[in-house]
Image: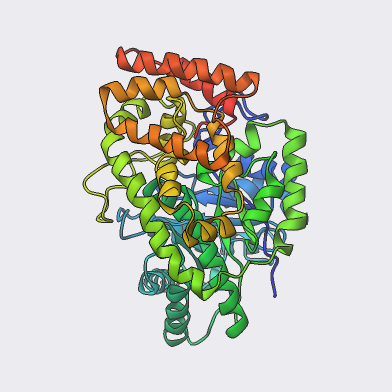
Length: 502
């Protein structure tokens, strides 16, 4: 390998509940994100930072700001060599509003700018393509970059920079796409060779964790990821290319379950992952010293993990298991969507976003339901005392009880009981019963609770003082929602207790 593969990637996901240790308020406007990037590198020890162009306002002068304000640091820790700034591009199939060429010009200009200040390493040389569904989409974006970088004018000369080709990190965001993503990678590598005359030295397939859970539930998502990791490992062994998988994980179990308190169990669960996101709640809702210690652990241990094999027999069974669990989950979510959207309007904002079309509601077999983004969705349900990890999971476990399918789930979802117990400590059963009086779909979640408690052999209930306080707050939040009163202050307090908005 000619480059360092970072183990940790800070992101701008707005899931923190507390005021960042370096800031004066909980909301982080675009103008402060360059400072945030620098501190994530220099103080927390993170290796990579995702600069998000997807559905978000973005500072396009990021490279100028970094090298003008923190030149000595980046002179000694050059971007593109020791530290990495990686753009998440807007997908032109979703956001066709000139944001993609603007991102391209920023990348191209960065290569020219650092040469002018005497730094030889190209600062940005790969980018993330969200919602990747095909190899053709990836190659099309790369062709677009090549065309833009080859434009010639006396004020715009391609010889000013030295980046005429950009490599892509495909971000797979739907459970079945994740499971079958190795086929997209294989086709992409063949197309890349035909179009550009060479094959990349490596690839970093990026597996989403939040959006597939929002669309299909927690169990199908984890199983799909395990199949993908197993197939990546086998593909690397049988083809002349290294794959370094990435995962977009967050603090609460529904969105990945990685926090400063869970890094060891996370590395065990997702063995084979080489880069994980470190989202805002991880960085700002825990004591700084614990954050630094946890990031150091990930930097030293994550990339040593090896993906576990998922046998061919298990790979044949897993799609059927996914269908069982996702069917229970989706049917309930569709019927409680109105209540979720009602609570979502009160979830506090933490970053500057532009209007974005979420995944849930595309033609993916889930009807016409529209839902908020994953953080807000998760926050809304936790605020009501109904953690989404539990929805559909209990009935799925009841359906497969005592069968080979149960053995497959337990073999590959290592932290299943741990995650259910952890989420269940924020459950408010009385709230759930109250909600069921207004909408019988919530009775299905009560059945989930019953089946999960049978499965784990203990009651889902708060155990510590913070969890008991969260229970009380969720009751007040629910009552305010029913009375059409504003529960925003209570929602913020509850988020701080669980150390994440959503």
